Length: 249
Picture 1 (cartoon, rainbow, N blue to C red):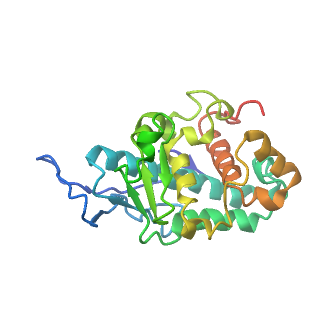
Picture 2 (cartoon, rainbow, N blue to C red):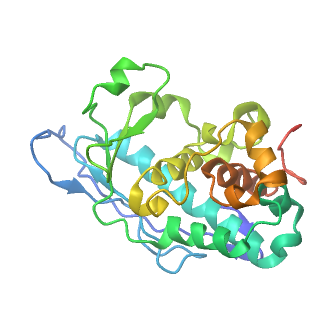
């Protein structure tokens, strides 16, 4: 665990899957597995998490819950930074310029405490897009079922835990989505109830565009998904290495 401002992020877990004999799934069933994470997360009064569909096996569910845990930890650091340093913070200015801190704070609150009722993570390749894009698609939002996200097998091999940040290259080198918990936040924002029907979206994805938004288009800097992902990774990395491990912009 890492401390921030004298506090420690604590997570309580409970077993969500039975151990023992192999689990068999009825792919026609609509039964969902609940995330094993409770809502007792310091830094968040009412943290919520998506449900996990029963086509996810025990290993899938364990890794998804670890990613959910990382989303709560990294957003707690981001929120704490906002509260303690405000709009004059170098990290805030780097990714949001002089954009509205009220918007940024609200987005973090929305991501972690808004209801995720009906929001579902599933592990079966329901639309065939994982197989069609091997070693590229870590997951995708289902347009035909807006509350659902498919997590592809590639997610489990390509996305790393937050505990490895700064040890596999700079954030600029690997990108914030390299980390499962940060990538999961981007997947949250594909769901209309999380993005506030597209208020937050992927308006710009390259690093150059993201930096340009912060410098020249703050209206969209505070509405662009990747500005949040870079901000959170940048801030969190300071808990590992003094000054962080952003790399050269």
